Length: 256
Image (cartoon, rainbow, N blue to C red; front, side, top):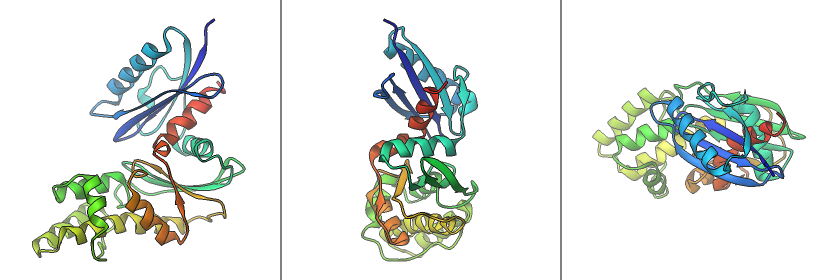
């Protein structure tokens, strides 16, 4: 008997995430790969991956994210806000929650009430507070993002004042030139991301429900720790939360 599957494809600026659900909403496939230079080529590679694994059965795909228009086999494109909200509700099993999504090019804060988006705010792409900012600063320090986050735990509290990645990088280069320990600079980088997110949160009304982190930084425990200190509340996350957008897109595919 032919089974139907439902694919959510989240083409981000840095990574492409795919989740495939079966008719009972069980996870059948989960894939993470670099987006690379061409979102179109990445989408085609994902198509091949899905079709190889569903073994001739039919599937419906919905695309979201930065490169969602590059997925020609998707039946529909849905906004990142809608998909991340629905995916977060699924992952954290809560209908009332606040979501921080730190992506490669932007950071989103989403308030969800009764499973529906009630408010959201998104930063501009030049600002600190994104995965790209962390990547640029790691390159400047000649270490990986993972190493920077670990190093930041033993750093002193110094701060980067610039909100633009280009000017912030100049600040970091100046700190290096003055012989500032890398641990201190690493702390300043993570603190800059966290403070930018905290400032963004002032543009909306957070509710009493859980505060959850999704996106590429959910694996970095020190980011989670500093966010908790900034918001004065626990921040929930899980490695699966990186797939929130793809989960949400797959759930939209089930409605097509």
